Image (cartoon, rainbow, N blue to C red; front, top):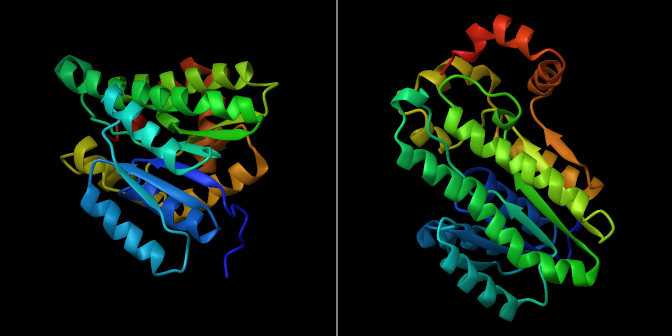
Length: 265
């Protein structure tokens, strides 16, 4: 029987229809949370809701939302606030990537990544913060990436968007230091999800890194541990986090000797 660490907590999860978002929705619900699931696919959200209800958890609330649309975000969050007294935890999980050499990349793809990965995340955060600050409690969980720490070939646009998420999160954490609101970033490496259906259409990257790939279950477990401990960051897997630390200390050396690994895309 799962522990009820999040009993009666209101947890909003964006990008909740698959991958990490879906796994977090089920795990948080099993831990007693009232999960509020946001995603573009109503059909997928309804399926997840049924699965959660079959586990005798609190009934989830579902909202169809494209986080690249600021007006939609405002409307949906207004509806959420009529249903619940406040949001205890916001998990900004919605995001996507497209791997291309920058010279060949479509600027529309890059703009779309920033609209979803960065601006969508910021817009959702903006709407829950006033009440959190007023209550003196709450957590903002931003799903970034190891790509936000180390840029690699063919991920210039995606990596830039995740660097932006980390920069925003780190600044926001310090701004909220005395408010009781905590900000945590999650920086995973490659995960076995449908993310790569768009990011890696050729399938070559997935094939090259398959043995290193994380499971959504593992990532969800580590995120939940991080929330309970109010960690600053969750970094997965450990060897990639070690690599990012070495990169910060000696970027030139890492770029030179890590070329073969970086070219796996």
